[in-house]
Image (cartoon, rainbow, N blue to C red; front, top):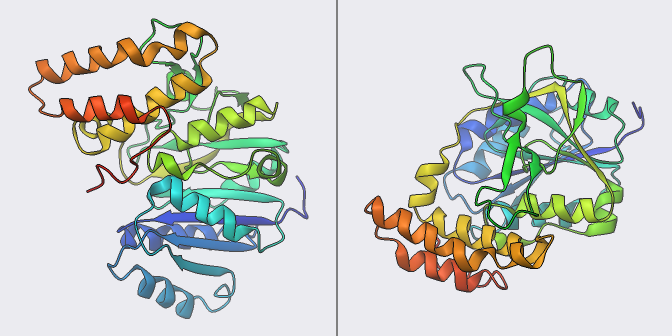
Length: 305
């Protein structure tokens, strides 16, 4: 492990101040000390700023480490992390540690990630509160098969067996929930793309890192707990579905390994329309908008709540 590693943590939050307090507490308890903690508040307007101020007042020994910034509007996870990356430039760092406001890392999580000594990106294993594996990062994300609708063919959760999973293994991409990123990655590929707003901004960043030959892997010994469970099916039928589909179509258009994959949005749209029709959802206009806007990730504000 690089004992001289200088880690800046970036926490993006939106209206989850109760969770945020737990996350901040877990960050200051890390067995490897974090140099700076940047809290990016997506304009929660729910007392998040006051909570951070109170936290710093109580924890006087670390209050200089914590920097709070309000974005002034909800930029989504993508815009929030981009803002965090921009602010991190003001500090001397060797690694960025990205944290969502509902992810609780174990006290030794950062120390274990640093011991992996990866020049690239390393992800901890996310667990649900009931002890089941919540790490849905793909072992493989299929950008070759034009007829495979679900590109995520195998996830970490599919192979995870407690105490038997390899200490360190390669994965295709990471979520912006716990990954440790070396500065060299940021220098080569830049910041997250804020146009995604939510969903697949992390996949896009991972694919850009892979193009530059950086290693992306997962440590089975570094653990973090998700305080909320994923519910992709509900997300698809809500306002979030627009961003899920638009950004998925964009990934296929931009990163497809062959011409046929890059054409996938042209037929996949009809499968989603058929699904929404069968399930009685009245969001078909959103699907068409997602398809049209996926060319350049336009209209990021169109379907925000």
